Image 1 (cartoon, rainbow, N blue to C red):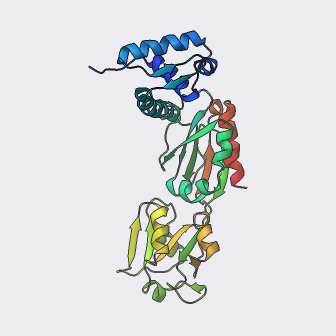
Image 2 (image 1 turned 180 degrees about the horizontal axis):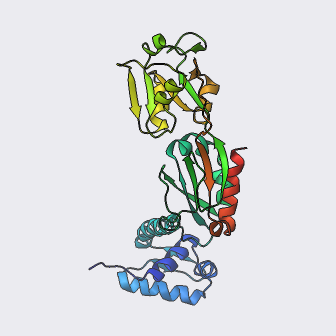
Length: 295
């Protein structure tokens, strides 16, 4: 059986010890100094230790009080943080965003102003997934969905259409932009992302280039690993430009191949939110903040 003192007494003790005053603790807790004194006396009886030395106009912690305060303040802080993390804090609303992993890692996190949203009373919980999760069942507030067709049933805004580029390190293909040929294809490794709707086989078919039977390829589930592989000089990755814009700007990756891909239906990222969710001012604020990042 656990030996746990009354939680209320612990809260009163922690406030008095931190503020070094029963009066100030009472003001913080919106109670009388007598109520604080009573709770602390009950706590001292429970643990059979004196926690404070009471003087005429002041109090000081005993050695036992100092040790107890150092532990209980940590416990209360952890309890407060655990509660806040569940989104139960009255002053902070936790909103859940479902978003494709690479878009979260390479686009949203570098751009979104977390601090500003926090000052607005919003904390964020991200679910990195390409799956179409149910808003109600999964308790999702906003989703970014990737596909060839707009989402059904829910309102949405288009964030951006996918613009694919072939990238590699500057020394992987030493020449400046060249045309992809069967000969060049036999000399390079193609980095594939299995979760992307446009992959190398579609590109080669579109450009009427016959793939080599023993074409060197390496496969990754999402673009984060594919981009990392390209940065490490493993081959040429065919990825969404917006995900590698930073690497293109600093020269870590370059475009070496003239890729022509023509298709009427290009994959698109959609920002999705049911109207009922948008009625929440915090959700509407977050939705508009994400939408503005695409402009």
